[in-house]
Length: 219
Image (cartoon, rainbow, N blue to C red; front, side, top):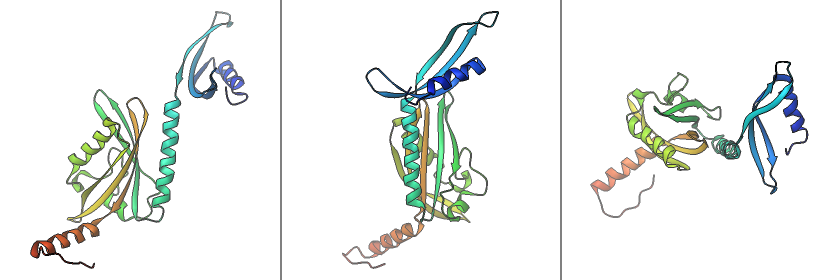
């Protein structure tokens, strides 16, 4: 064990409960490499309560620990970026089983203002951020997320409309994807309102459609 006294903690827990579940520790191998492990151990005793032997298993969770730490660092970077911006920040935990992918969302307190929260609706998100009726490109948006998760991509960015009071507001969403173990991922996303940019692009397209000659445009 890397941490002094960790072995004593392990046996103290085992003595008090006769079992240890998900006992996570850093350990150093013979080659000096440090890994994270999770121990699950059961004490087997005879009829008089005397210890006969221990049985259990040890799991290498180094990759999972590194993934969690990478996610924390990613969230910290995103919080710093969005702290002064008008944006919405969310996190999703994704798991996969025989039935497919299961998404569980939460809005993060780093979302700096309420304008995009209003677009997301008043109910707390669970399996989605945007209400179905407000997202015209629902199927396409879900497909992008599923493709990123299953392909092992580190993230993705896309733009999509959200209907509010009968009018579309355009959002740009940047998402970082981190694996947290077999069949499990954590995503952190930031949405920024780009409606005015979209409207400006449309004005420029209309202008150039009317007169395709080279010109300067000042906005």
